[in-house]
Amino acid sequence: MFGSFDIILSMYNIMTREIGAYISMFFTMFVYSGLSKMRNFQKKVSVLESKTKLPHFINMVGMLAVMILEVFGSIIVILYFFKNKNISSTLTKHIIHLFIAFLIVVTLLYHPPWDKKIPFLSNLTTLSGLLIINKMVKV
Image (cartoon, rainbow, N blue to C red; front, side, top):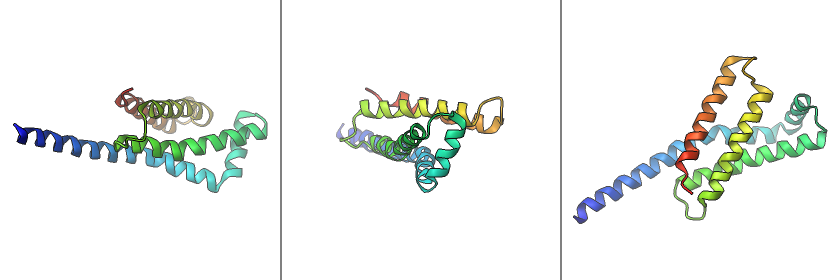
């Protein structure tokens, strides 16, 4: 009986590490994107400003928020899936919801379906991944 429990626990630990690795791979794109925005901040803000037609300050704040979400939000979600006890499921859910909202806005601004199909479909695929990950987080 005890041997069966050890096997189940061992399988659970392997699956946890695997899922954490898959989530890490998924969020690598967001971390890279956030770091890239830091290196090219003014250019990214200018492009955003041309798309939104909002005041420069609002675009700067928005770009800062996106960089924080992409880098630190990704790290928090990854840590959650590696079963870090300090990361709450509620916080993780909120972050994933922010990613979903962000991706919808970015898709409409930069990759609308009536423009180039492949970038739109790529974002749709990423959105689907976020929705699956959202379902995996139990509150």
